[in-house]
Image (cartoon, rainbow, N blue to C red; front, side, top):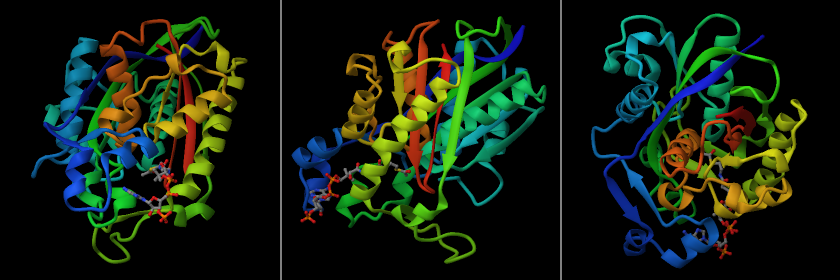
Length: 324
Ligand code: ACO
């Protein structure tokens, strides 16, 4: 008998305002054609004024709890992956806890930028396997529109806002890869790549939130190599490989990165959940958003083998293998 963290519910939330690529043509030297062909992005959602990360996260959490048939007080812990918190502190996790009306358990945030959800999921799995919690709400939520430099065409057209959430519950399996739940994970970071993707402000430097800066083409090369490597490493830990996978649910940063990674893993694009065209890069929210949309579309079904993979600022990157 092996304890597994099994997905019991999934949900997402996207702000109402949809911004098509064409909207940037009025203020920037860019085009719908450039954005679509270089990134695969066609539109993204931007949060309304006052619609903060914790608000998006709470909507997604409610949807996931509803699918799980659980109440907020059934949850022992909330782990939120975000790099765009409402405030420097308290954590978005505790804000979500309050907004859900949850009066027990504990909540905290994890920050690994676009890889944040993979790190949060791995932490949640560890909480369940160590007996700290039986039921964990894992959320990825971001308002990257708040850290865009709207004069920088090489970054501001790529990102969007949104949130996704999973409810995990500890259940016993038979210890094989046929078990439902999280089967393995692979986490990495290398701080020497800091200049490739960062925000040029913060509490103990400028005292301001700052704006996102990215060396896109250098990051592109790192991404394809590291994403395939980490996904394969996570699969290898449980004796599996690319062709065993039903779905790659990748971080949705760039369609060209997603397809090059899938090709390296020998997984056809029919087995990749794609939302980048509709959401842009929502950083830590992108994987749980894609999981939720994949379920709503009828793509992901119970028993499917899924590998998630993501890379972001740090650099930090990783992958999780789970059976839905
Ligand atoms: N519209 C028109 N032209 C543009 C735009 C734009 N919006 N943005 C850049 N360009 C220009 C550049 O100025 C450059 O012009 P030049 O040749 O005259 O200098 C030209 O287009 C090519 O620029 P590149 O940056 O080389 O274009 P590339 O094909 O690499 O695509 C992109 C850029 C989409 C950013 C790509 O590099 C990418 O997706 N990188 C990875 C991003 C990523 O994965 N991030 C993940 C983590 S995100 C996180 O952690 C928060």
